[in-house]
Structure formats: structure tokens, C-alpha cells
Length: 153
View 1 (cartoon, rainbow, N blue to C red):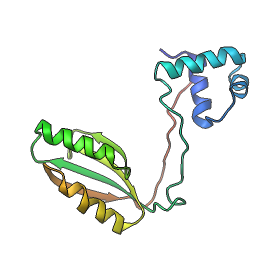
View 2 (view 1 turned 135 degrees about the horizontal axis):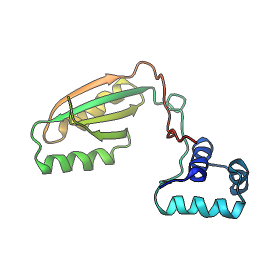
View 3 (view 1 turned 45 degrees about the vertical axis):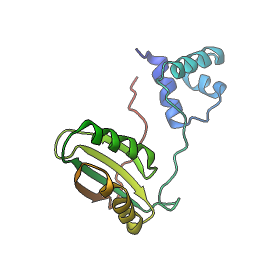
View 4 (view 1 turned 180 degrees about the horizontal axis):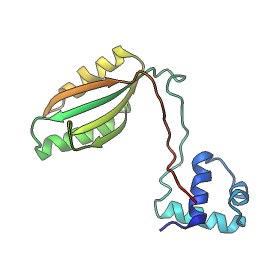
């Protein structure tokens, strides 16, 4: 269970993970050694999963984003396992969720352009065993993109 100091630390690190231990400690009102121990504990328990750099996709040349909904014809375990394994190997898929409702899987796919997306579909998705339906929702405008969890005081 997270306490108030843990949440303060996580909020600060989500905003800027490059803070030094001393800077972080000052922001949350702790000694540097106590802050370091808490961060270490959050890492060891898996609350802090990893540290990353957030890259602007468009400025990096990835102009097309799609929410791709995939349905499988039969939920044979082998087809599901193959789908999950292969999706994990493709860097164009930034997120993949197994879902209930209108599709079995929702993928967030980012590529350079529409031609790259067509290649992704033709050379990968359409070739997976058991795929029965694919629906693409091309993102026209990003309204809100965030990675920070909404920790409250």
C-alpha cells in the first residue's frame, strides 16, 4: 500500500524522472537517504517498473497512429498464444489490450505513413492464424496523451 510520501515521490518522478535524489528529496520534504530508500523500495516491489524517455512521434517521423481492433475467428489457445507472441515482437505496436466487447484485441499502432500501415497489415496482421476481422481507426488528432497516473494527496 502506498503512503503519502510514496505518492509524492511517484508524482514528482512521473513529471521528471531525471531528478537527482537530492532534488527529489527536497521536492517531497525528506532527507536524501530516506528518499533514496523509498525509491529503491518502489523499484524493488515493481511499483516503479522502469524509467523511459518520451519521444514526440510526429517529430521523430511517425506521422500515422491507428487504433487497430482485431478479432479472432476461434479462440483456440494456439492462435491466441501466436497472436500475443507476434504482437510483442513488433515495435509498431506500442500497446495491446485483450478486451471484451466488439473486438478481442485493441492495438495502438504507430508508423511513418499510410503505406507503412498497409505493409504492417498485409505483411503481419493479415497473416496471423485465426484473425477474422481487423478494423482500423486512424487517429486524426491527439486530444490528450499522458503517461502519468493520477496520484492524489
